[in-house]
Length: 449
Image (cartoon, rainbow, N blue to C red; front, side, top):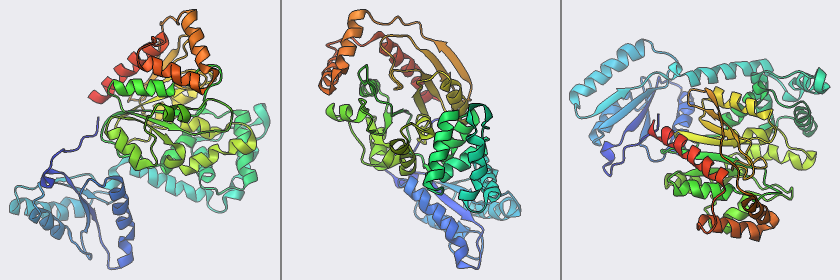
């Protein structure tokens, strides 16, 4: 379902959020709940919200409800930050709500389920409890895992999803020595990540990255590979999608590898480059295509990516970055792979996350369709089901393919070719046209939910 917000100039008609905690005589007891409120306000500065208590602390539930009514609030959503539904919610809160409804019939109060009834909260508590199994110094706890990962292609053993999640958390937060981090990343590169490991790594990154609080559906893709033999088509694809009414978030990272990366061409075309999360959010809400460096989304993940400069090879963070769609509203992830054996791993992760996605081999590891060959499309729907869809589009003629290859001779050639395509002075490659139609259809279905 798509997220919606009430668009009204009258603040009284906007839903107000009221958090409810139990309360205590100890002032410090409220600090975690105040931190939750502060985090919510940072995520949704457009929503009026407050914290109240059932007993021992101020404001009480009754006081908060009466204050909202005096301010003319017409819609209020009450969120109990309780681990379960007990006597307090079934009797005390219900009685207070009934009293307020009788005194203030114009204010509609919706009581939401207790926090402990949420699957996300249950999983978070389970992860917190499991951390006790790895208690102590991560530099000691990681040693058996390094041994398991480093025994060669036949002797190595995969980590389970939770172990992988913990390992990536340690890598993100710098809790291993440089030698241990490098050993883990190289061992995983040699062994290759299992589907469960890739899922654990991705979940760890998502744990550490608050989603952008978007209110409209958008396209999300990562651009990390760059191109050598063919022109970089990522800005072209993104701008064409924007012109068809689809906001696009491109997550990128410049890397010193001599390849044609997206950012220089993106800037040359005058497309918006966000200097942080807030600007990226603003662009998406306006329907733009916007480039956001991974450094602004997750400095921790970007730091793990930079290990390539010391180790000489890509690492698991590269694969994880391609699986990120860090948006609150529904999104369609466009993802690509270079090696065919990564396709089932990617669909496993995205299926487990229930992330709608369209995956293909792409062009030199980037998302846009290869102009000289048809693609095998893999689609993940919102229920996590995977669908294989062959592409019957015939590649372009030799002359069109030669023009595309000529456009890769240098940045100025790529820029001129891209502008010619955007200005319709040159025909789009057939494979790219087919990709646009496929994305447009899937996005329309997503936005309609």
